[in-house]
Length: 255
Image (tube, rainbow, N blue to C red):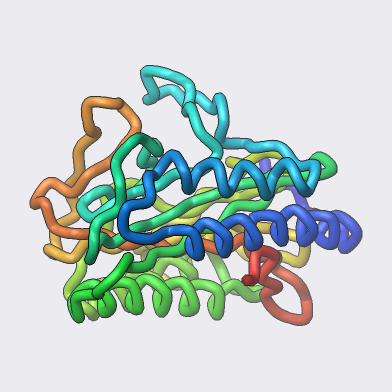
């Protein structure tokens, strides 16, 4: 069931989304050669504490997970696509890093992700990240009243496939509100004009993921959480929480 949010609720979700935006900005700023992933998690945790917010990630355990997620920030490096657990690994020059973060404030949740390179970037990595961001922008552009979920999916997929990249099988965005994952699902590839019609008050987490090698397969790392590309190529991830409104899409996690 899809819950349509009131304008007041969307304003409240914007406040949660801005906590997410601040945490991602702080974590990206802190990311440097020699910094551990655990240190990035602590930076994000500090933003939560300062805002009086809580984490929908910490302790989260979906059906596929062997253990509850142990951190507030997902940090996925190089061939890790999503769900990376922050550990003692220290960032190296040229690492491609994707960070994903959520915050709950006043009973509402925001969720967003971004990718960047630490130190000296490779041109191929910059192109990968730029494509993920373009795909996100295309998906948001299609998130208008009267369109359908398939229009968002088609816009994202067209950008990703057009660049020659893979799209991880079965992963995409989702509805969001009182809980981090709500209906409807938002695929990263699909047919235009299909699926649920978009209405004022729907709020979606739109999140393209792209695989540099062009393949769609992935596997779980031994930790049971981190999803890695099957071909060992690098991946990038971009995400915003977006409200569908009569005046156009409103990005609640805008940085």
